[in-house]
Length: 92
Image 1 (spheres, helix red, strand yellow):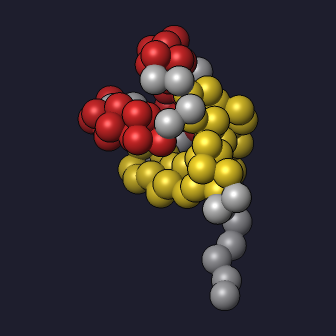
Image 2 (cartoon, rainbow, N blue to C red):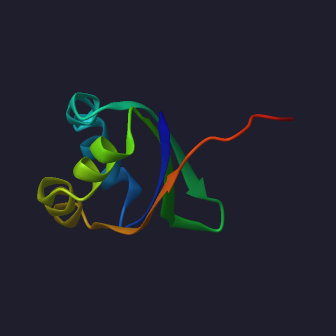
C-alpha cells in the first residue's frame, strides 16, 4: 500500500469536482483504494488529495497518464506536484 498526495490548482472547484467524481471507476481500476480531498482555507483554488493506492507503479501509471492530464486541462485544473509516500508508523 502506498499513499499519494496530489497538489492541484483548479480554476473552479465546482467545475472540477464532478469530473473528479466521474473518474472514480477509472482510479479504482488502476488500484486506487480511497481519496480524501482537502481545500486550502486561504486559497480555494488549491486542492490537495490524499490517495491510498495498491502500489506505487499503478499510482504512477495513472497519475502520469495522458488521459488524466488531458481531462484536468479540459476542466481548468493542473497537477502542481505529486508525492508518493510509504507509511512507516501511525501515532497520536
